[in-house]
Length: 282
Image (cartoon, helix red, strand yellow):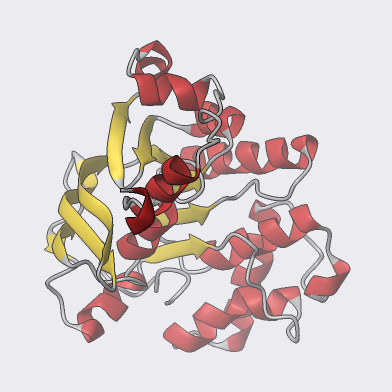
């Protein structure tokens, strides 16, 4: 997918309310349903954090929102347009108005940092090279990497790679910016710096931001609204204060970091994994 917005394109025509509306979203991998009728809204100009444990479906939801997975059924409205109902070429055009920062950064190791940031501009605009270089320097400065355009990704620390990936996602001034586990693999101090950068970007550009994470400290710092997804279902949706006050058992288990009950019986273990009981144990 493209990693940013072509400045020459029109906007999403975002309503004053939600930038993203998801209705009855189902996603299957083969015969197995991963998302079971997801519904939520992401208001324009806010940061929505999607929380969930490993295997909860949060990454599948993110991949579906940006068009890397196609839903079995349901709708995803981006502004006033149904993303699911579009042709592939129409989705490609709309994706140019989104920015995506991948979990590992996904920088091209054979390119300099500057060339990584310039890539979407060279691919999706007709800007001359001198203008592209100005934009590259500006975007790197916005993420705290001024002067690093000639470095190779291998020369950067983990936090710097994350910032370079964010600069690339910002290259075309997206209206919606997606993050996949922005703090993953970073020490607490570097992770806090990434959180502060996300807050700064939202304030400076008034963009809609969607963040997938399992890091509670980060989530409660950056979120305007939060979703907790568990086993392909949304079990909570609201402000950080509303989630903190929730008495829903699954929410409390996740927020209070309570482990799953220990499984000691073979039948219970198999049932947890497959939902089936071994024939010789029936």
